[in-house]
Length: 198
Image 1 (cartoon, rainbow, N blue to C red):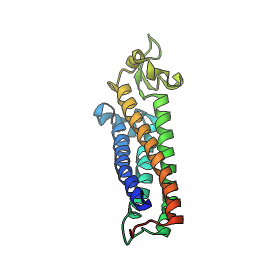
Image 2 (cartoon, one colour):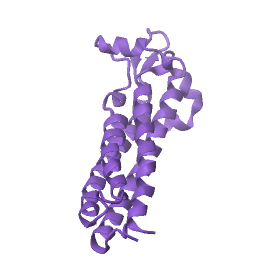
Image 3 (tube, one colour):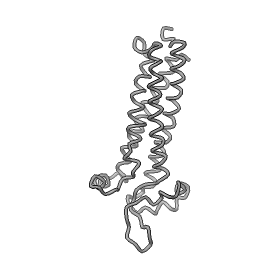
Image 4 (cartoon, one colour):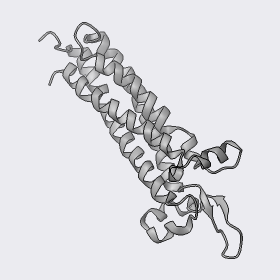
């Protein structure tokens, strides 16, 4: 496969994955698909999972992937960046993509390990409070669904967070692999040419 065609093959999935990452991160701000928790969080009442606020999906898996994807896609277009210099630049842009994917992957992994912010009862006789009941479980709650009802509100917040953070982890992992491949592809394109004229 030509290095220019390979760039196109890499860029198109990156667009989709960046969009998926942005959407997942935005949805995470609205547990149970309600805006009230985001509103309460704006009033300095911690009701949103901390890792959601780090915006790993928007910044890392989204913007830091979207910008390199555009340049990587342009290296496959004739009369634009489909030359050795364009391929050389794609190595740098792909490195930015790797950094963004690593950021998104690490934030989503920590969010998955710590579990969601929710209302729960730390003691059987005490009042329900906002907190992260699974924070010290080291992710063991993920395999023990019977503990998921520890969270009282928002409803189904554990499933909500697990599903979206898992999607972010998978998307970031694929982004990382694609950007790493593009770094190698860019090196070959820089050394050997893009074969765009063929």
